[in-house]
Image 1: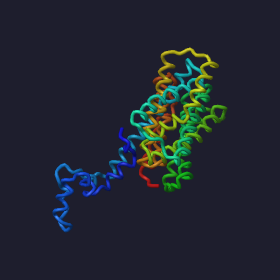
Image 2: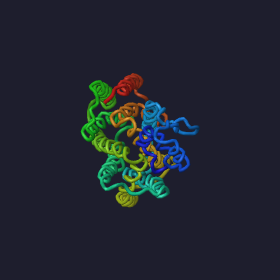
Image 3: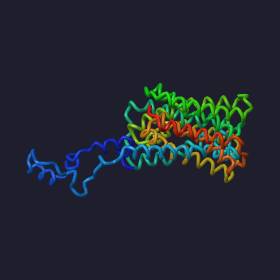
Image 4: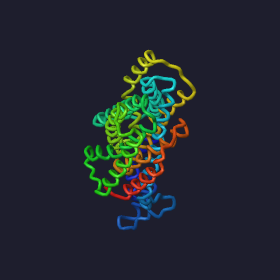
Length: 344
């Protein structure tokens, strides 16, 4: 991946001028000088010259939507993979191992590409990402899943799009439209109603842990999306993992010595997916997508995440699909369609 492969690179290409393409070609520069200042510029029509200005703006939006959707698909497997990991490992072991293992490909990529450390002004945001999506959210949700089903946890975390949009509005000064907020609130109501049906309307310790996870994750997503406008998304999560490495290595050592360890094929597969799929590759796609289409708009794609997780829970864990799931899925998809057609 090139150093300039970032979400803002597309904007730079789109405003390129013919003179900019000829600046590095001595022969072309001499030919242009020989024509004189009044001669017409033909660089834009020269065979082989890129015509970046012809790229439709919707192409970048579609690409951003696709990247964000891939991130959501990866995240939808997080809870089932965590349940697999807990079959043979303790919760602290699962959390710390996933982060340590995710640092391996992230750190290797940073070294291989000889990426310079971020500017000093970006480290505070990277620390928020590390605290939110590397440590906070994985730990809180894993502890919750010790006593909660994946389907229940998935529905509660379905409120994440609304919390992310609110956090983005406070942090970045974004002002989504009224229609955007109405659709988001409707989606949240659907998610809450679904959660009430699953839990009987009685919040418990797992719910409190999940609500806390929503807050720290929303902060991490907001800062990550903001930073992805200044550096590639893979570097954002890569540096966050590296920053958290001293904590995760020490935590993994303590957890392995204190918690029982009976690894099975499913528990190992679960932790590997958490490390490579959820913690690294999913975050890369997610942050890139947010940088292109905006934090608030991308966050609404996560309205589909709880229902995807419910599907994986049935297929991978054998949980029974709640009868209200199809109706909730349709309502959530309608909300997503509305939010994607509004402009904040």
